[in-house]
Image 1: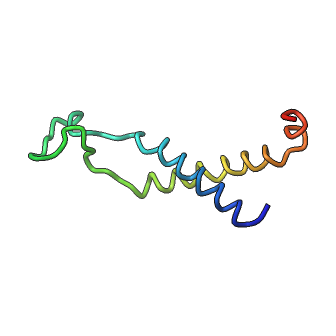
Image 2 (image 1 turned 90 degrees about the vertical axis):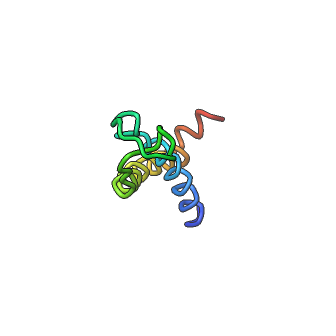
Image 3 (image 1 turned 90 degrees about the horizontal axis):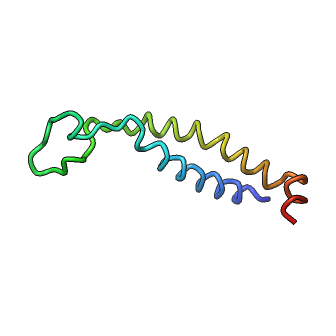
Length: 81
């Protein structure tokens, strides 16, 4: 496979991991009973994006490696044929 293919697979895995990580440790205005006038009550309070980016990157690297290993494994290729 070419380098662009590896990057594309990592990009897709990274976004999937981001959507998995986003709801963890999320506190909403309903949870804290601190409502801001004119906002959705389910809106997050004190959303910290950078820790989620770091966790997503740390999770997506081994997931991509596992996926690429599975795609190149002769044993799995033989099993799926």
